[in-house]
Image 1: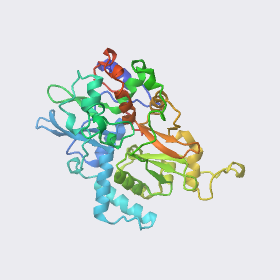
Image 2 (image 1 turned 180 degrees about the horizontal axis):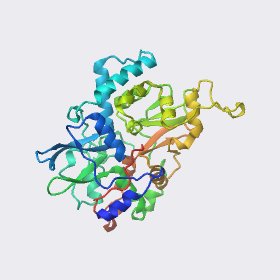
Image 3 (image 1 turned 180 degrees about the vertical axis):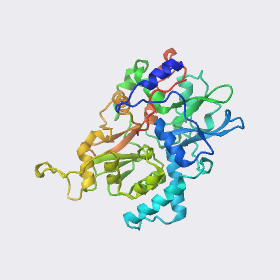
Image 4 (image 1 turned 135 degrees about the vertical axis):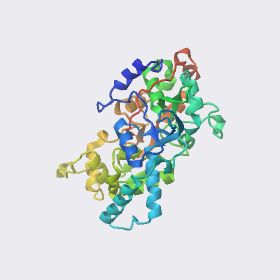
Length: 395
């Protein structure tokens, strides 16, 4: 069963990730429309989740009407809109002056009620569809919109792994009771980690297939977005919004080697008082975020390009600790294991020189699994979905 009881769910929530942190709180976090952006960021960070249902409370202050999901990405997008409207933090400004302007804008934005923050459609349309008795197959098709006939307009009615259309799939949905109360939240990562724990339900031809053989990481119509370590953080987020992606690969200036990853989760724990840090080069931002001390390596160990910055070198020296990657010879099972052990939502595909050539998301993995009719239609998969396994804020 997919965590069918509160006791079983509590046990799963106690399971720790690589960083020895609980993967999910027992009770779902609810955000109110009258809460401020600052309090929402604090709540999301404390619960270590990227998104929560936004609700309008009734007069009894107990019952509510669910509005939508509000994510860290929505909050970032709202901040970018306000920066554009203010026109006081131009990229032409010196770094320190831009930091000061972004700090002032962030402090004002922190007081904004959540009702004034625009939410993307993620999860909004599936409130009535999600029930505690829903099976994994139904969850993939009806709520996460992955699988046969799940997405209107997809080739053959089915979004394929690597397809840009998978970006339109909800990342999570709410399980509601008869009274309209949110009893649980199920994310793509929950379903993916359930499959990992029960991989025997999958045909070996799926779990043992290589990334290359399934077309994962080649991206087809979906191109990865890479930014150099010298690009300011806020400009990376502008590019993420323009390209409609949830993460960008951070590459060394001189070699284009993958040295980092920037996603919404990287700012989930950043208070609105510190939004001035968005003016920093992303390499410097990541160095501070991960507590790295930039050290110039001994001359004999210097294998970097003359164009490499100190921050690019510092990030490259940390290697696999900061960014999760694989080559196209990796199997689906190995990618799932990486996602679980490292508590990430995506794995970058790199070439022999460690340059990014693609990215595998949770939605890609679920799209591959959804074509295995034997697995998702079997009795072993007719499991209730009332519980979470592994949604982490890492990305």
